[in-house]
Length: 158
Image 1 (tube, rainbow, N blue to C red):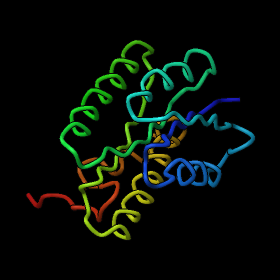
Image 2 (cartoon, rainbow, N blue to C red):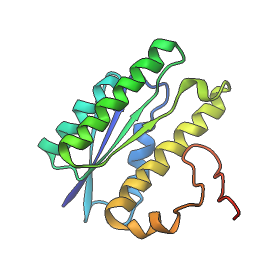
Image 3 (cartoon, helix red, strand yellow):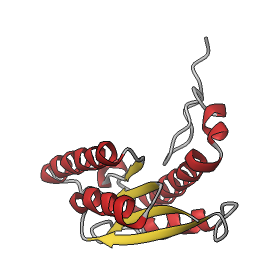
Image 4 (cartoon, rainbow, N blue to C red):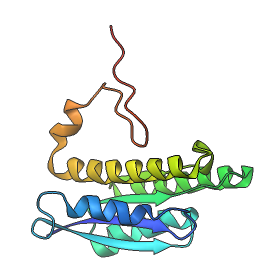
């Protein structure tokens, strides 16, 4: 059975991991074709190694890494460093890791920020599923301005 990894953090102010897990549980083949391996780490700087371990030690074919950088400049810098760690883990394992960050300063209204968290976590979980089992879904959406977190931007008319 294939494995899809989900790694989330305690630092996040919304439980994006639960959203990703629920989305994957509603994909065709859940429990028969694939299972989900879930881990939680303290903060987003811990995501890279957790993802690498899920790939190398738990046999995950793809991983969704969820984090929420804060508003402070140091949080922005640390998020950049965390993203580099995630990229390095991808290159070291030749396995996709979908970085799913929701920045606290994306929305001032907590209710709107929660909507972004739900949308982004669910859409990227679905993207992970599509990458493994229905890549034609991604191809069909190429160039369509599809967004994760906000309304789609749409294609540029040519």
